[in-house]
Every structure is written in C-alpha cells, then in structure tokens.
Image 1 (cartoon, one colour):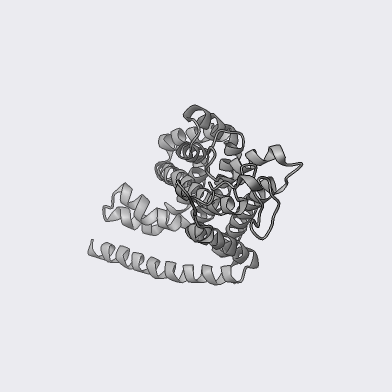
Image 2 (cartoon, rainbow, N blue to C red):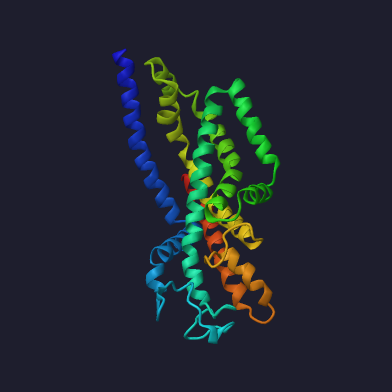
Length: 308
C-alpha cells in the first residue's frame, strides 16, 4: 500500500512539474503565432478599456443634477453630429457621445462574456465529466439531454428563454449561457473518455480514492487545454448572441450602453447618420474577431501534435 501511495504522489509531482513546463511551452508557441498575439492584444485592449472606462470617458457635471455618467450625458444642441474633435465618433439622436457609449459598453460586453462562459462552463464541465466517467446509463441520460439542447439553434433557444424571463442583463446572461452548456459537455466528455483509462487513474482507484476526487483532482486537470480554447471562442459567441438579443429588443434596454442596443437605436438613422451604427458594429466585430483569433492561436499552441 505504501508503494502505491508513493507511486501516486510521485506521479502527481511529475504531473505538476510537467504542467508548468507545458504552460511555458504553450506561451512560447503562442508568442510565435502572429494571429494569436493579435487576438491577445485586442482582448487585452478590451479589458483595459473596460477597467479604465471612467478615466477614458469621465462623468460630466451638470447643474442641479450633479455628476452624470458620460454615456448618459445629453447634448441636445448637437444631436446626430458627425465625428469631430469634440466627439470622435459623433453623437446619437439624443446628443449622447457615441465614443463614450462604446467605451462604457465594453464593460457590459466583457461582463456578459465572462458570466456566460462561467455559467456554461461550470454546468457543462460537471455534466461532461460525470457522463464520461460513469458511462452506461448515466452517460446516456446526460447525453440525451445534451442532444435535445443541441437540436435547438442557440439563438432560437436564447430568444425563447429571454422572452420567458424578460429583458435585462441577468436574464440575457442566463439565456445565452444555457445555450452553450452542450458544447462544453460534449468537449469534456470526449476528453474524460481518453483520460480515465490511463494507469495513474487505476493507481488512484487502487489506493481507495473516491470517484469525486478522481474526476476533479486527477482527470479534469488533464482536460483543461480544450476547455480553455472552447471558453475563449465561447466568449466571442456569447457577446455576439447578447448583442443580437439586445438588437431585437429582448436583451439589455436603453439607456445602458450595450453595443447591440446601440445598433438597434441607430438603425432608424442609418441613411442620414452612419456613425450611430458603424462604430457600435465595428466594436462588436473587432472584439469577436480578436477572441476568435486568440482562440485559434491557443488551439495551435495547446495542440501537442504541433510541438517541434
């Protein structure tokens, strides 16, 4: 028994050291990938913009009202203004600065991306791990639930849930998050199936480790690479889906500066005032493009078959 315990402990130490060297190797390969680095730069720019939004576009002081957030401040004398030195992206039909609204909208998009991926990843990882580890009846039940969710298009499922729950930031995140659970579940299940039969798992069973410990202490850490790639690309899809819901009126409602809602407001003036739609649309496209590029770069960096 002592020999088995020692073998498992040595295996865990070797895995820890190996993971550190693997992550260093992943970073080295990612740095050599121009596509991945461009995506990383765009994502870091989004994060910094969201963090320092109040500094980039500070609040305005209005008499009798006090401090008014930049994205709510209305300059009614300059409605539907085109880009200028005072308003780099112009103003909308209420005289609100589009640049300020795009900057503060990055916080909403980033929050949606992280929360949606967090919801779908936690639920999907648990479902996929349990299904892959136990197989047979448990696997069949969980996978049939996943198949039912996959049979419904993501955006249609999100629209149905958002319509039932009502508009609002939390409801949007729940609606979009549920739709991406099956993708994590299937990804994790396939990874667990390839890991659970390895020798160190058999050694853990031999020393009496419980199923929960084996699943989440030994198996799941060896499945993190595909989960990370899926999470990165899932953030892009989550931001895009949330913008689509807001565009059709089932997402975040004005005056909150969400990019999809800004597109919906500006489409009425698209022929006479293009900045109302162009700049929010470019923000969505740029962020989704950056996250997809980062996901592609991480996929290449984490793929051991590409190791030279």
